[in-house]
Image (cartoon, rainbow, N blue to C red; front, side, top):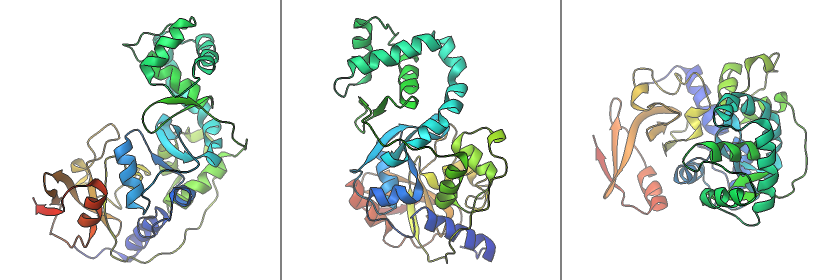
Length: 314
C-alpha cells in the first residue's frame, strides 16, 4: 500500500479510534457511548459491526428503533431523546407516502392508540395486522401501510422492534431533552473529524437546522496498522457524505452498490483497500491494488461467523 499524506493518515486514524475500530469496547453500553448508534435493519450485519468493535453480545440497556435518516438503529435507552429530536424530520419525509397509503394523521393517531391496546406481548407484523383489524383499524397486509404505521408509532416513542423482528411496547424511560447541537457533539465524538454536510447526511436533519454548529475537537491518534473486515451496513462509511478520504472514488462503485448497501469491505488504517465475501471454507478477498497483510482478522471473523478461515485472493 502506498503511503498517504500525514493529514489524511491522521484523520483516518482519528476516525478509526472514534469508531472503536482501533480501540475496542468492552461491552455494548461502552460501545454505544462512543459510536452513539449502529445501523440495525439487518441483524447479522449489526452483530458483525459490533464484533468489529470488540463487542460479542448485544445484551444490555439498548433499543432497536427508527432514528437517523428514518432507518433502524440500535441505540442506548438513555439516548432515546434522539427519536423525539428527529421525529419531525422523519414524519415530514414520509408524509406523502403515508397519505398515498391512506394513513392520514387521524388514522395514525387511532392506529397508535390501538397498538397500545393490542401489543400485550411481542408480536410479528402479521399478528399485529390481524389484531388491529379486530379492533377496527384495518390495514392492507400486502401494502406498505403496516410498516409505515409501525414507523409512525416508533418515532412517537410507543414501540420498538426486537432483534428477532417482533414489535413490543416501549418501556418507560427517563425523559430527556437534547438539542441538535447535542447530537452534533455526539456525532463528532463518533465520526469526527467530519463536516456539517456529513452530519446532515448521517442524521437526516434539514440543513436549515444545522447553522452555527460549534467546533468539536477530536482526540489525536496515530495509524497502528489496524485491519478490520466490515459488513454490509457498517457505520464507518455510512457516517459521511464525502467518503473519498477513506474510499478512493475510482474503487467506490465496487463498495457502494446503491440503496445504502455496502459490499463487505476491508479497512486498513482507515482506508478501504478491498472487498470480501464468504466462501464455503473461509473468505475471498479482492484487493483494489496490491495484496496486503490481513494479520489475524480472517481468524477473528471466522470465529464469530462459525466458518472456516481459509483465505483466497481474487
